[in-house]
Image (cartoon, rainbow, N blue to C red; front, side, top):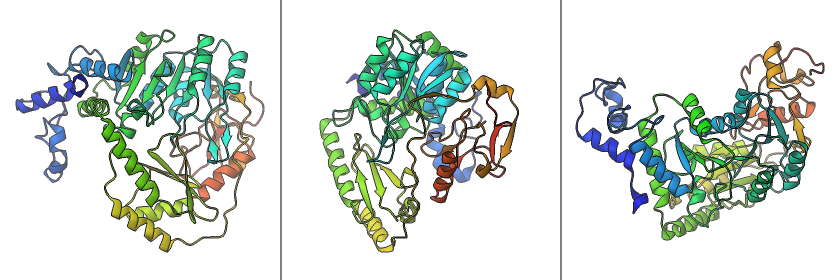
Length: 475
């Protein structure tokens, strides 16, 4: 079977077995120069940590084993071309934005995108037109923009150079993205999709369809999130008449390291083969395991388990008075580590294989039920209605670069324009964007999230938030 092949991994393995003498980088010399106390952990992988030697190809000009591995990935995922990413989905998100827009050109962007999308917009100098996603009370978060909002944005800004969407969200929730793609294409506008959490959508009908299958022009997959690839291993899939393939290639060369990790690239080769050769029986076993894990996690007096389009995402919605941070800490005390904790949810991700530590999980859940006491209700805060349906930055990226900034305490920042993004992490979706005006509601939400133990990313937590040095209207 063609998809069972792993040409890049095989080439590295064969090269290693020749016991080559290294007069080249990297400096560990095939693992020979490495501290003895950690050799046990690193020895096998260091033998594969090569550079652009004869027969091992070059990521930035592939003609051999890397080209073959990427071609197999494109064939499996149904792309015209697939590129290996060694800088995570971040590298792909940056490249697809830079390849489609330039300074002051409009880009329609889903407001609850990952921070790397906004970093790409800033690097490009584009003028983002934000479309606000709907707030879903059943899951207590913003999900995806509805088709009416997108249509309104396209009617107001038919000269936009791209539409940027996220599908699925961090919690595995999808939306009817096909109609959004088709609508944008009616305006001859390409659709770029951050599908970081959906690499496994390619496997089976048990999962939602990939945006690539539904007509998106460029799709990014974090292979390391759901497939057996090393951290930072990702794919960029291209299938478009509206986006320049040459520009994608160009910007990937600019963004990605000139010394890409061969073990990481080999893991992408292996991950694609793993996904492509899964059988119906394997999927059935995984689904049975998911049902069993969800059953073990059923504790209706403490939390609800939310429905998800992606069955591998299991979200615990905590009851009023139950601390999500407290539940996560109790799980970790039992050596069970969730993926994400928000102010009122805990996300656990089931892998692409049957879960085996059944007894351990049962004991952990039992221990939590014994230890957890219901506390007085925490003050709740409304996080919907933060944005209008279609909106722009208060101050453009270009103006921000020309203005002086200062640091102000969080509780005194209302009315100022943020000179940095304020990001609850994970999932890495900015609450305040660089260039947005800070409001009292923003401040209250940040304070509330912090009290609930949510990590907030910004540059200098000790000295406050970086803002423009005036509250006055800036044009």
